[in-house]
Length: 290
Image 1 (cartoon, rainbow, N blue to C red):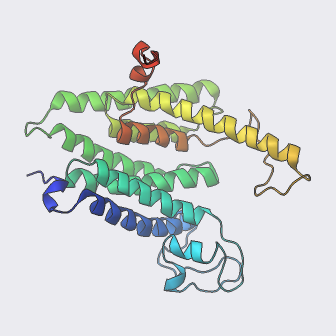
Image 2: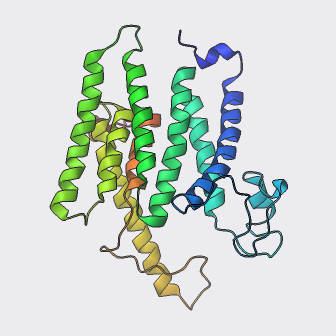
Image 3: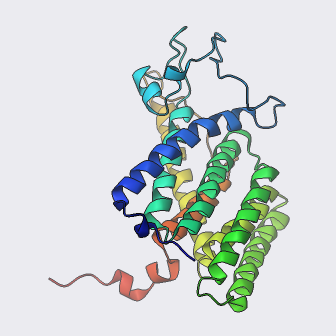
């Protein structure tokens, strides 16, 4: 029996707030996973300052609040912490809140929450190392398969056609990115992006796979142009004013991780139902009459 979230008798805003709080807590743990993944270090080790080695107490590890209260610095040596810790907690909180705000029932929410956690790890790890962990892709594939199966069973009768269309769309999406990877010799995208495209396409289904692909390139183009403009501005202003960021030598030939753009496209379709065919339709560009 499917249990809608509304059956809990709790206002939606309160459920969303609880989900955001839980997401921030999970995000704090994800920071540990991101830092220690593939380093051979245990995830159970106590958190400590990377500069002075001082162990951090519980009140130093309150998600979001501790970073703000300490102004992003170590309470012992004053070394500055990377803003990534705060952003991971915030991003996870927002994603968890979106899941609860948009999920139709408890099972869908329960399956999507770990998906969001894996997407956060994938994005940050790819930005740091230009590598997509196979563990994340396999876990996403398993969860996406469960979600597709649950979606196909939504009406009480298993919809084999819907299931096959979803997997066919995922294979075609992977084939498209494989063609880009193969024809460019891995210069345009990495093979990890090819593997990641499969579970992401499963998440959005056959009706959203095309939009996922197009939106990922749109987001990628927009972000890359912004970063190149910011880098050029930093170089031009360096020495004239104090900038809060370094002058990165970002050009058209710079290596930019593509997984964040793929995941952004997936989230835009999954949570907001964006359809590029609708966005590009003639009616979308007709000016309103006054």
